Every structure is written in structure tokens, then in C-alpha cells.
Length: 264
Ligand code: ADP
Ligand code: MG
Image (cartoon, rainbow, N blue to C red; front, side, top):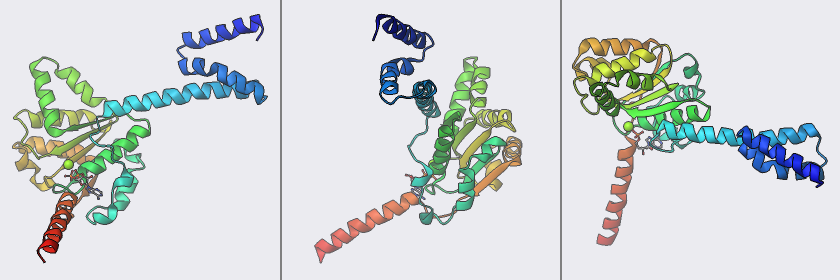
């Protein structure tokens, strides 16, 4: 490399670093070498260099969205065994997985007893949404209520509401598993209400819709919440066998078979 060209190289690297295109700056030497040996056009070399920066930025943003989302498990939809859960409407789930429901701010309700895959399906949809570039946040109803309660005590109610209004997709897991604190139902209603028609919420619950009024203590709040949630929603009732218990059953059978084998 001639002296002037070496200086120009340093300047170019400097420009890239100044613009915080650090991955491109780091790859510059390699791409220039490649351009020379492969006789790439100027356009092709520039495209290659910027592609490296774009890919690195996309990977960083995806990682940041993944961290923010707090999805409790790495589940994806391909992990879900539809054959093992006849209670689930596969066509509906596949349709939800296209993420079209995010575009019209529709909600999704998974209703069913424990162990049928409600959390798994919400997490899988959440992951698909994260991968498609959306801000997603996963929480449980009990956590949401506790955080809102704490925020109210500390005078941060508005910040807390803004936080829950932010994500393109909010997943609220396990509504009805634990009794909500007295202001919990109202906090949940406010979160649902401010997201209504703006962004999607996935809610999982073991409480059948007909029983919401009794489960939340306050029939008016329950009715108002259901009104917002169901106005534009897909309701997936999963009334099948518990996958968790299936595991236990086969485990129990294995143990039993082992014991019988030793006895006989
Ligand atoms: P729920 O939220 O309805 O109580 P989960 O989604 O937590 O149930 O599922 C319980 C466990 O069973 C999880 O470990 C989950 O991965 C597994 N599971 C449930 N349904 C299926 C399924 N159809 N295919 C594969 N794993 C499943
Ligand atoms: Mg669950």
C-alpha cells in the first residue's frame, strides 16, 4: 500500500468508527482485500461492507429485544406437539403464528386447565413476534399486579402504565392462578384498557370466561375487561389432557414396570 493510500485507509476507518459503524470498520481491511483478489466492483465492495454492519446491527437489536421480552423459556412453535394436544385448534395457532393479529391489535386468550400448553403457546408466539422485529414483554398477572401496586405506592403510576403500554405484544400469563391483590384487578383493567385497539395482548387463564366475574371479585371490572379484551380477539380454549401429567404418568409407568420386572 502506498503512503497516501495507507493514509486514506486510516481515514476511511476513522470515518466508519466516528459514525459508530464499528463492525464495518473492523471488516474494512478484509473486504478491501477480498475486493482486490476477487476484482469486485466498487458497488459490490461497498455493499459487502455495509451488509456486514447491517447484519451485526440486526443481531444486536434481536438480542436486545430478546433480553427485554423476558420470555421464561426458549420454546418455539416447532417444539409444540399438536398430536399430543387434541384440545388445541392447530389451524388457529398456525394463523396466529403469521402474526397478523399484531397488525390489527387483536388479542389472544388461551383458556384451559393447567398443563395443556397455554404458556408454551404464548411464549412461542412471543418469540415469533420478537424475531419478526417486535417489542414483546412477558409477565404474569400476579407480577403485573405487584409492580403496579408498588409503583402506585412510590408515585410512579404513570411511568408504570407507560411501560405496560409500550410493547407491541404484552403477554400476561396465569390470570386466575393466584388471587389478585385488591387493587390488582383494577391495575390489570387499566393496562388492558390503555392497550385496547392500539396493541395486542395475549392472556392465559385457567378461569373460564363465564366465571370471570366471580374470580375477580368485582363483576363490573371483570365485565369491562372482557369487553375490551374480546372486542377483537381470538379465544383458544384448550380443553385437552395435561402434558405435564402425561409426563408424570409415563414416568410412573416406567417406575412401575421396573418394579414389576424386579419383583417377577
Ligand atoms: P400451561 O401453561 O397450560 O399450564 P405449559 O405451557 O406450561 O402449560 O405446559 C406444561 C409443560 O408441558 C411445559 O413444559 C410444556 O413445554 C409442555 N407441553 C405442554 N403441551 C405441550 C405440547 N403439546 N407439546 C410439547 N410440550 C408441551
Ligand atoms: Mg402456564
